[in-house]
Structures are given as structure tokens and as C-alpha cells.
Length: 270
Image 1 (tube, rainbow, N blue to C red):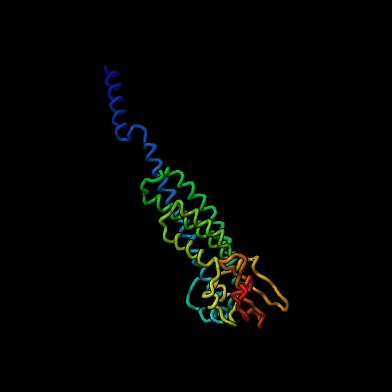
Image 2 (spheres, rainbow, N blue to C red):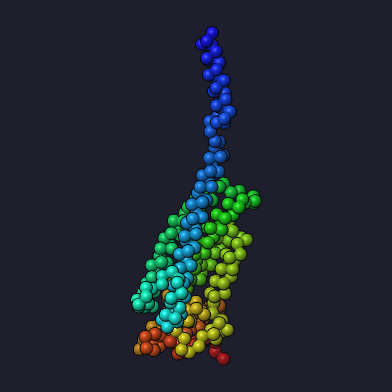
């Protein structure tokens, strides 16, 4: 009799435990939700770190474009990378090397991060046409940000506007309402071909960095070197086989604009 009561008590205890522990722990759906939340938190941390590095890179490039004198005037503001008191500020070449190294670091991080975001999106089982959750939309925006980063690198390094526009177009298929993406594509399309109005903003005596800030970086295959150290930057126009050009000549330690020609290549005969 005691044995029977003990068995009954054991069964009752099992039923009680089953109720408290939901008979087997969390469901598969709950486990997936927990994993998604954990992955999302990690992605947000990586994205914040990536954004911080990009901001640092922008600051470096601004210092390079400002030139040695203006860069020295801006020292001592307590910003990141400030030189120690009495220490000579980095030369333009040193700043450029720092920027290049940081850019490579950013691209390496972005490549790994992009893979993580794609895997996360695939795990979400997004159905075309279905309303996205905040987390799903946020992941798509992260992927678009990575795509824009690589597109901007194509433009910055070698004026590869065509490749950048292809990247923007592909990203927009998955994220069609992204205003930043739409704006970046529109800007690339505008900058792809030179106009007379844009070229007119270039003045004699400007440095290559100043011209780059106005017109963008020329495609590497459209840069020509001439005698006595002169250099020509050629920018395609919308009409096929035509190009405008900016010509530089050495002056002290830099190259400065000495001639601007909108009809440098394929000029129409009057």
C-alpha cells in the first residue's frame, strides 16, 4: 500500500514538474527567436564599430583635403588622434597612409559583417510581399549600408561609377524604399558624366585634392602623364567618345591646375 502511494506521489510530482517546466523546455520557435535576438545584438555592436571607423576615416580625409596649414590650425581640439604636445603633426603622406590602412580595415570588417547579415536575413525566412518586422527591416538596411560602402569605395579609389551604380541597383531590388540608397545612386548617376557647369567650378591654381572634392576621382585609366611632370585628368561626357579634362602642372611640392578644357576629347567641329 505504501508502495502504491509512493508511486502515485511520484506520478503527481512528475505532472507538477511538467507543468512548471512546460514539459520539455522552450519550443523550437522560442529558441529561434532567442537566437535571432542574440545575433541581432551582435550585429548592432559590429555596425556601431563600423560606423565609428567610417567617421574616423572621414575625419582623416578632411584633414588631408584641408592641407598641412589648415590641418595644423585644427590641432589641439581634443579630437581622436590628436598629437602629443610638442610632437610634429603627421605629413600629408603619413595621413594618406593612415587613411588607406583604415580603409582596408573597414572593408575587411564590412565583408565579414555583410556575410553575417545575409545569413541572418536568410534565417528570417522573409516572404516576398509580407510586412517586415522592425528587426528584418533593420537587417536589410544594414545590408544596404554595406553595399553602399563598397560602392563608394569603387568611386573613391578609381572613379568606377558604373560598378557603383550596378551595386546600388541590385541593393534597391531588396530595399526599394531606402532613401539613402536612392540618393547615393542618383548622385553617382549625376557624377558619372561631366557637365560644363560642374567643370566651370574648377579654377586655376587648385590642387588635385580640391578638384577631387568638386568633380570626384577620375577613373584610373583616364589619368594621363605628360612631359615635365604635367598630368591630365579626363572625365567622360554623356556623348560617346567625348571627354572634358583638367590639366595639372608641378608647383613647389604639389600639382596645381593650369588648364581646364570641356572639349578635350571628341570636340564637335563648328
